[in-house]
Amino acid sequence: MFTSMNDVGGMKLKLVEYDSLTEFAQVRKTQRSQTKEHDATPSWAGGSVKDLYSGCERGDPAFADKADELISHFSNSAIEDYEMALEWNDQNGELDYEAAMGGEELFMYGPTIEKTPTAPVNLYVDQWTSCTIPTEEMMRRGIAILALAQALSIYRPVNTYVATGTRHMPTKTNLVQVIKVPTNPMDTSRASWMLASPSFFRQGQLPLTFYHSRSNRSCGVPCLNNRDWQTTQLGKWLAEREGIEDCIHLPLMFHSESMWKSNETTLEWVKDNMKRMLPEITT
Image (cartoon, rainbow, N blue to C red; front, side, top):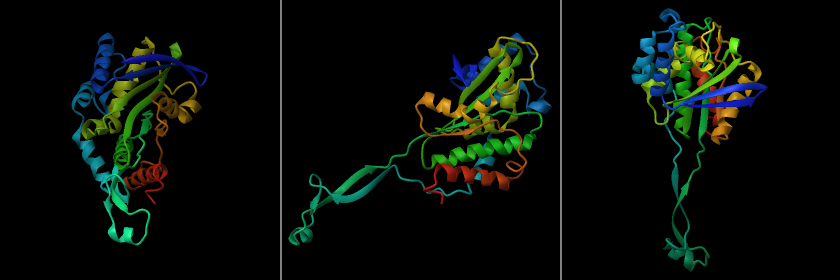
């Protein structure tokens, strides 16, 4: 686990980066051994703390099956990393007799391997939630994000991160927790569970806000103090730290009646983001 203090957006921001889901679960166990005050009820959290540990270890194949069903609507034709081209090659080429006898200057042709550049893209999910978001919409949202990562990975490397910003008001702690989602290489069971199960945030990241603020004082845990920065700049800031020029930032994933209300609107969301990232391919 790496922790740093940063001055961004007029805030003192604490950034916590977990090395793995295993470490994330261990930190949660450490926090829970100190106090059980902030455990959420399973009916609201979408699972118990025990379910959280199980998900960190094994994931949930049921979410993966739903993501696979959604991604089946997309083409599987990939851009080749390498392509073969026949062009003038005076080192490994062969003589084109007719071209040479016809007086052409370029008459040695051979195969040339050309690499097609495919820059990586980072996908940052600010997996914020509230009590107003129905569980089924959180599930559709997470599955859509995984489907987007799968669809984009056909064409370019995709690194997916949950990067959630929360605030502990009594201590004035602005906190961003970052953990990589296993989408490259793809572990659909754990990746879909992280993105689609409410319990990852509600039983995991939410109570760890208290742990990293070093306080058990009661708090509703709202967004960062500078919500505009969190909405527009958080993803860019994280990408720049990684040296990545291209990123998708999905901020403050609140309830939206039009976005996650059905499988059809969810699929349209995936297609719209595909077009935005790959306009030359998804015409």
